[in-house]
Length: 139
Image (tube, rainbow, N blue to C red):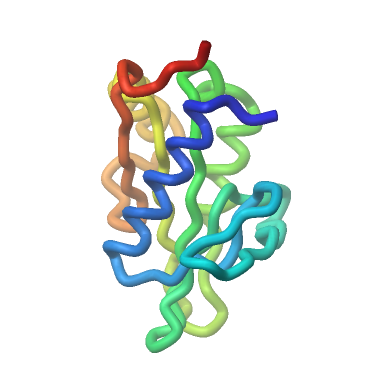
């Protein structure tokens, strides 16, 4: 079961995707409705399934989103996901898929270090959104 922080981060990622012109087409959750329409579970990309997927129908661009709590940030799984997604290009465009990472505000420096360690720092197809922990009541 996902934490409230994780769920809020996924929502924030979805908002960023929509602001960037993507339609939300897949979500890894249970009984999720977005704007009144049922959303399907995302496909596996290499070894992992993203939390949320966006698609621009006009340009055929793809965006994946991953929510990471501070605890999850340095896990083997997170490293694998970032490497898998960053090595993936959209068949229809030949461009890297866009990646939006959602993290707690307190993890911003740790995310920067992780991206640098993975040689992904400064990549224009990777962005992040963050959420202040004070907004989440996990109790």
